[in-house]
Image 1 (cartoon, rainbow, N blue to C red):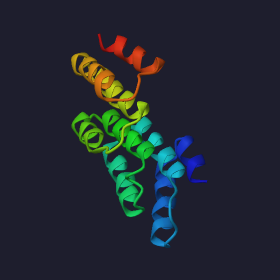
Image 2: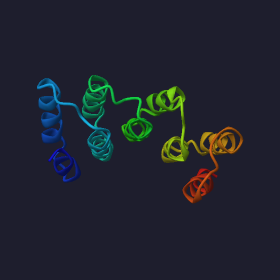
Image 3: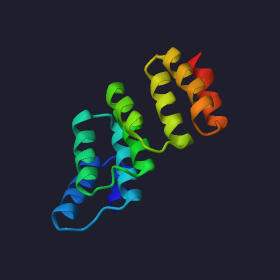
Length: 141
C-alpha cells in the first residue's frame, strides 16, 4: 500500500503510513523504503525527503546499499548535492549503481567536470562501469 501511494503521487499518505508502521513497532523493509525514497526524489521537496530519511534511520535501514543510492539520488534531486556526496562518501561498499547515482547527480546539476572525475575514479577504484556509467560519462563531457 505504501508503494502504491508513493508511486502514484501520494507521498504524504505514504509517509503517514510509514510513520504509523514505525510507531506501532512494525519494521520497514528495504524495498518499501527504496520505493518511497525514489518517489520523494521525483517530488524533490527537501522537507519530505528528510522525513523519509528519518524513517530510514529509525528502521535501521540506512546501511543498505540500494537505500543509500536512493538517498544520494533523492538529495541530489532536492538540490542538495553536498548531502548526496556525503552519503556517497560514507558508503562502505559501492556497487555500480552507487557510482552511477553520484555521477548522475553531478551531471544533473551541471558539474560535468566532477562527474567525469568520478567516472575516472570509478575506473580505477570501483566496480567495472556498465553501459549506464558510460552514458553518464558522456553526458558529463
